[in-house]
Length: 496
Ligand SMILES: Nc1ncnc2c1ncn2[C@@H]1O[C@H](COP(=O)(O)OP(=O)(O)OP(=O)(O)O)[C@@H](O)[C@H]1O
Image 1 (cartoon, protein in one colour):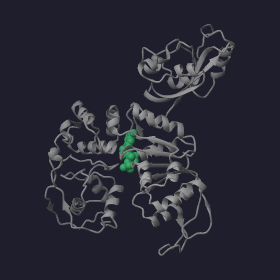
Image 2 (cartoon, rainbow, N blue to C red; image 1 turned 90 degrees about the vertical axis):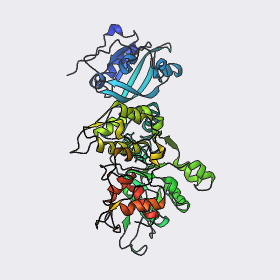
Image 3 (cartoon, helix red, strand yellow; image 1 turned 45 degrees about the vertical axis):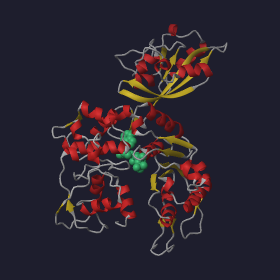
Image 4 (cartoon, rainbow, N blue to C red; image 1 turned 60 degrees about the vertical axis):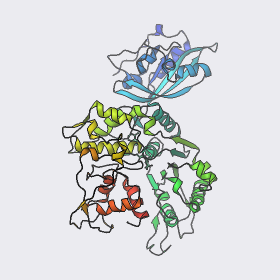
């Protein structure tokens, strides 16, 4: 049983409303504290004591900024947004996302502050409500979004604002910045979290495929439609539909998408009945939609429909101070059976200097590869790509020794005469992790001169595909691209 905190009545402002308020807040489910106008914590309810209280660090009578931030001055004087200052100015509530020191370490916390006015309309006290944000972690985590830089926090604060609503969200960011992870986080922080989260990869879908994938089809709708098929819109019923790479939707399909979003209805291909959709829309793209609109490549009406709440995801080079946190998180995510790695300061410094055109996906690739060289369990700078030596990065692929094998890439992929990639020295193995590329999971199956290199020219790509022995997932890892991107490239070059 938690003792009732404290609140020695003599410490409270002699304002009846404040005294009544404190006893009212005591049993509120959300952590709350009462502050005087000089930042002193006067009282805390039971929920606060449970989540944020620490026996070693008494907080009553202490300054709020000292407890939550370990600052000596109010947040606004330390370069942060201070909700008390804002609430004082506006004489109304203010809400902000902060990183607080808690007994568990740093955590994202949503802080809402409300001023309490006395009979003369003066601010007698403030009530602060704290809500732990579970969408992202501010300390190394084995899963999910991690980040604590100002640029990341701004995107997270936007996510927290919009998630509970039904407003469509548009995620804008370079490849590998975490758009899909963010979309999932929007879904999980929404009232629809218990419903389905359905991803539609809009790139690589032809017009006909797009329509039948999205809306489903009736039996006999076209040659090969031997049974009725449920579309992804129907699968997303009661949940969230994530349209990834919406900038790739063909113009002719954009109007159908607009109709779906505006009317909430659609028809299966070959069907006459109107179906009612029930999903929350999240879309993402790395393309400049406004520019595409000006060029007539993206419909303005669709753009304005989906862009009610745009969130810009920062590139990794804009959040370099998150690199150590991300690195420690990825090192925690070792595949079972693999040893846990540590990273030496010289390697961490090199990672913080790099520009990361492939963003977090590239970082993840680089660590996966470094793992292969860290024989004593320590990643050193020597295990990283030699970014400073462009001449090496431009090196042509080394000729490969043929190995007789008939192993196909994967079911459905034409078997090709396979070649085994030679094992490269660490210095050669890492000029890569291309700008739009990278495996999301799993260790690399092979290390060679092309390992992790996003092969840009069609001939080089075809050569690398033909020369590889392994599964499609391993090939993606080898080329430093996601399986989705690999599939797209294979299809585009008629290799799938
Ligand atoms: N903030 C983050 N914390 C931890 N991991 C992250 C974060 N952001 C992205 N990642 C990881 O980086 C990789 C790329 O993320 P994701 O696929 O969501 O990016 P994307 O922007 O959707 O890429 P693309 O546009 O190429 O599809 C994934 O492995 C993801 O788990």
